[in-house]
Length: 267
Image 1 (cartoon, rainbow, N blue to C red):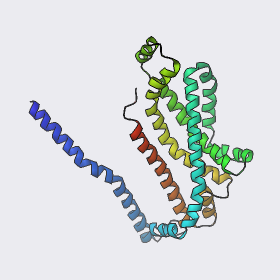
Image 2: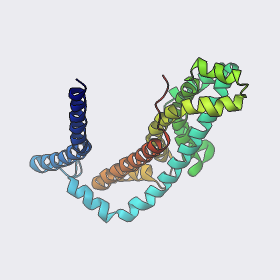
Image 3: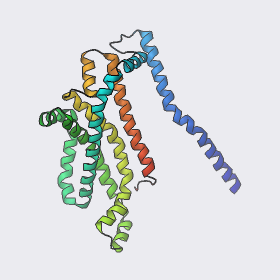
Image 4: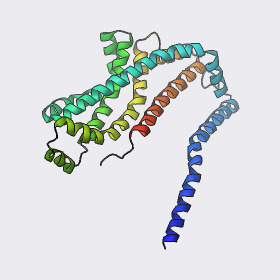
């Protein structure tokens, strides 16, 4: 019986190992298929370039306007990264305060929820008026859009502690700082990275939306300009570059998570 069970497990592991390369290749194959279908559809139906350009024309726009794309990518990178860092750090600090003070939690959490319900496109003009058209207004918007997911997940993670663990730490006369660093923080990290994966992409969206409202550079600014000037291939190239940048941030957060988090979140 043991031999049969061992043989079955071995076969299962072998089949899983064979499926892994196929599973990893599937998204790339699907992406290539979509690009081919896009090219054939536009060519066969003779769709005008000012409506939908072919992938080959978009690729040519990438090459022809590489310097323009690079110049406008840099402000967006600065704004989104700064907003990502500031928004997540502030959110985590507030989460720690909320966990240790029910009074502050009850007073400020509803305000945080209210601010989250306001569309970012409505907040952006106000912040541009208050802070100007420079980096600061875009960074604040990217930080705001990153704030709430991290706040909620961090509060949940810091509270995802077994009562017996807390009781044990109290029996050992642990201080609040020791309980935080050795129990609560350990439980929170998986939840925190779940939020960081979300905010990695939303910070880019926040920066681009802010650039629509008032800016002289950035991917959002370039999207508006190419739309008004009917530079459709460059418009598509800008949107694809924005998506690739957001995916890069998402992937970097996932890579760090794999290196840091080697345990599962406590339910």
